[in-house]
Length: 223
Length: 226
Image 1 (cartoon, rainbow over the protein chains, first blue to last red):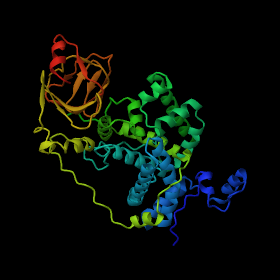
Image 2: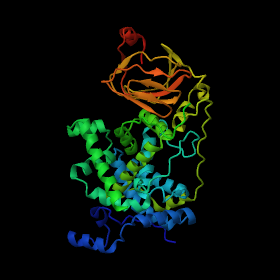
Image 3: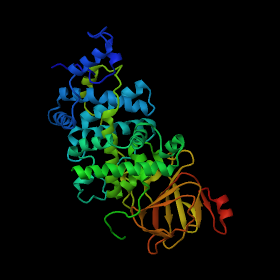
Image 4: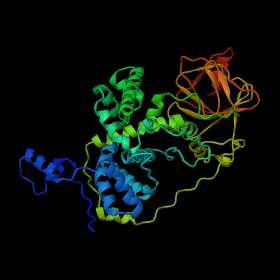
């Protein structure tokens, strides 16, 4: 079995050109060739299939594909939240090991793989910053008040809704989409964001509420 | 205790957002995670917010890995998992949400609520600071208000979230039972009163000190380092 983990998909072109066969070719052609030859990133359903293969068969090939897709993106995420490159890479690796260990607990009816990996990496980073582990919800907590059966259109995270959600994000007004990105992918609280964008905290909140209402509406229309 | 399906008073949605994005402070995180255990509505909202964070992951430009050795990584997959650390159980007559229980387990006497070192604040109110969690001007504490007692009238320099763990209390804004979160900010000057018949135990998070405003407020502000 070939276990070489490569990082071809979407990695910055410049970083791959040294030592590659395509050295010296024009940049535009380079990019076109990359597009033609690198396999497309796994889509939402494929990601879920790969996690199932890890869960059921301890499939290392499937893990390698998940690693190729997620680890470089998680590294970017963790660096944006303030980790240096080497710490971010370590945490991205640790996050992938959690995927390997906990693949059985992943339920595609409840969540999608991107959301799951986002929460794993988010918690990894918090654990690294804190004395204690992130106070986490425990589904087996005797104190947990169970939910009423969820309405299908209310569950953003369900696998079949993720693509709709991503399309909906793409159609948000620019200021709302930008605010979402800052909220999730920079280490700033609402207060800090309001201060830096020089808008009242209330405006930050109302913009986010607008964005969420739009996303909910597009899910309801499409599902 | 009145049973109901879900709490009716919730944290501000911006606070839930910070929690989902991973930017809340540790002390605020304990408060929110504890509320989520008791509130399926906010839990669903946080799940939606997490789905948003996940959906945007696709658009992040990848950063090439520099020091990952594929062989070493794959070798790690075959190693058995380290067992998860066990935490001592917390003896408590109140069913505490797990995220809070974990923090109390570190306290002396194993976190038995009755045996914890409650400190009298006066007026039938006792408190326990949950240590090593809060940073800056924050405070995370348990409050125990004697049945029928009032917390001295006060306002806030910052924001306060108070979640009922057992019993209940009322203020001008409403009636709060298990899982309900009362919100206060500097514009609110209130006198919460515990329900008669049962002591009210709450988890309180403040991001700045309280300021007492009643007739003896000047004195309380000196004595009570709230």
